[in-house]
Image (cartoon, rainbow, N blue to C red):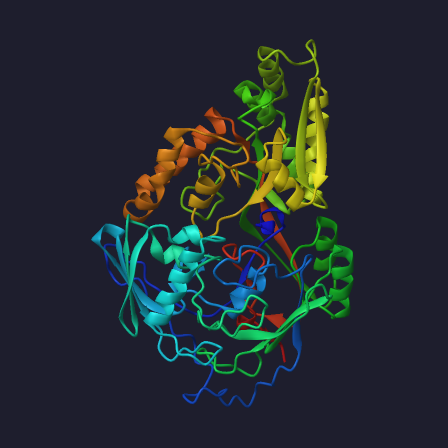
Length: 539
């Protein structure tokens, strides 16, 4: 169950300097990829007389339980905040450079028009189990993920064969061209792990990451603790955090109080009032940046009154986009199309605008409005989400003036999703962000035809749109200009012509940390993840 699609999510990446060139046409796409030396050749911390050992625990305060699925093949939920520190992929996405950079692979090449990819693996990497990482181990991990067919395993759908050419060379042959360097940087389903050490109960020593599991106590306030993997390939410096704890704190005001006391180090999101207060609080630092997560208002195109496109268009015009963004007070910015800025396929100039006269005109054409019978519509949204509640409040008020009653119901994600899969509402409100840093996720998951709805909760079925969606991976791998145009065309068709969705805003992160933490940088490709290895405590 993909709980995180409704959460307020974001990500943090660190300052680990991994550089990669982005040459085209089958040239080497990575260079070196070795982090700044942190250890001597013996793997022990290098002597740094001026640095003091960091014995403190970095405490992260999530608002929900951390782990729902320990299996790196099928995990598709909140546990990515931990698993991204336990496991690694072949690449990691650098949101500032807007490209994949080396991780377990140091360099890669593509050939045959994007249908063949070869990755060179980093040497001297071990799993937490003690087993050595080589091409055969990486091959087994990806094949197991594909075979499990869970979570985000679809990211490997283009793979025809995987070959361990030699211990350090992994070769992929694809069915169709795909940007496999981006796929390999996915937040989900891209982990390389020791298949013999996976444990569904959280006793796994299967990762290669800088941290390993210390303790897991499901349902406890301090649910999960991590400890340094001493043989990590990057080495360790004294000032880095070697201990991490996840302290589940559902109430945002409680998390804020704990941060001020220094009992937690990181709160993933503060409301506008608390964020403003945090900015003026001693011993606290704040950070704000755009995310890849936007809010989707999905209209039921399959049945009920919204089967009429004119009513869907009227609803688009009824939303007070400017008022909503103003009320968010910096925690959201107006969206332009489906694809957030920073990803291939973003369209500028598609910002929606409220137009109540136009909404009333369209409703009248459909037989509704002030001088016609009342129209009642049902809407579901995430319980406890103040931003979504604000949208509902503004929309309900606007619609009331045109004789439309919005029957809005806040629900837990599980209940909302179950109802949505049964087409049990007219309007479904949820967040979306990509599994790997590519716009494809919005179109494949949310708008491609499905016989049994999963995330296509507008229930749109259009063979022409499906064909365009199917062409996106190959275009992205072979001709990004054409891919960009294809994304633009699709967004205009889905939003303007089909009126299947309204996209009010892209969320902005509103983080708070204790002032003694250095090295924090947000990366929207990894929602809510803090890469603890990249942080250090001020001495």
